[in-house]
Amino acid sequence: MSDFSRRVVHWQRQHGRHDLPWQQTRDPYPVWLSEIMLQQTQVSAVLPYFQRFLARFPCLETLAAATREEVLALWSGLGYYARARNLHAAARLVVAEYGGRFPGTAAALAKLPGVGRSTAAAIAAFAFGERAAILDGNVKRVLCRHFAVEGIPVGAVEKALWTRAESLLPAASADMAAYTQGLMDLGATLCLRHVPDCAACPLAATCRARREGRTASLPTPRVSATKPERHAVFWLVTDGERLLLQQRPSRGIWGGLLSLPEDEDWRGGAIFFTRAMTALPQRVHVFTHFRLTISPRLVRLVRLPEIPAGYLALTFAQARAAALPAPVARLLAEAEILLNPDFALAAQV
Image 1 (cartoon, rainbow, N blue to C red):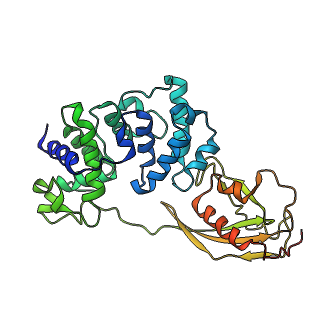
Image 2 (image 1 turned 135 degrees about the horizontal axis):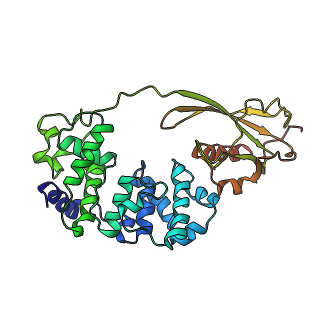
Image 3 (image 1 turned 45 degrees about the vertical axis):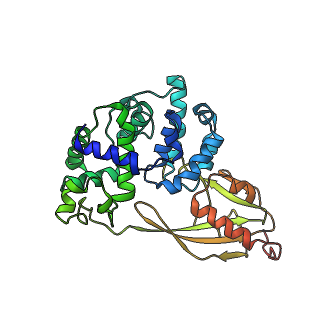
């Protein structure tokens, strides 16, 4: 074992995280589920979703048998919804093509929907003890600092980091789970982006970034660009009991989820006519690549007319249990408060 991996393994066994629910098993199903949820998401946010998923889908077969709507509803609020769609597709593929048993190598796991090279290696290390290197964002930061790797960690720099990561693997498969978890723990708890806790780090003695006073400049940061601004009007059309929802396309932002109509012309269009439109406060939702300013419009009707094709009319209780984007769920919660019995429905259809 290299001195680097030995120190990581020893530190993880003494000081790393050991109480996460997916650490208590080598069953590849919960391991895979956790790794997909942890992509671009912190442990604290994942924990309640992981527990709810296992309660609702205790095994791969139950997840594969579920509808996409059921999966998205449980995922609602966790973000990056392509992960949920890929999770469902991968479950069905493993059941159909592998008899419900996950392939046992990182190379085969990486062919599943939503499972990239690093995620596949983590699953293989935790579930099967395979010697496979991970390289998520946290691990890139640890390696870039320890070895003073220059350049934004993409392209040729990322390729060099993969080579480095593979060269550092412990020789024994029995150490792979502790080593892989140790790298994750270091990046998540000590080698932080802004205020690293170098005094507690097991790699501090040989870390070039610490020795050279460069922890703030490594990894080389991307040039931050101003996020584009977008605007949308969300129409919350309700008779006080039911509300109108529209299913979004399967791909793109909030793919496959139920959302509110966003047509600028709804108020004056042919579908609805009302004098009871109320403008609710604007709010901003930040995506990875842009900022969305939402202008909500609450339309209170005496009754909903015939529902147009492509739309659904659900009660608020049904909507709460459906697959909704987080800002839409918050809007509906606000609307329920506004639409109490003291509010007169003055609109005419």
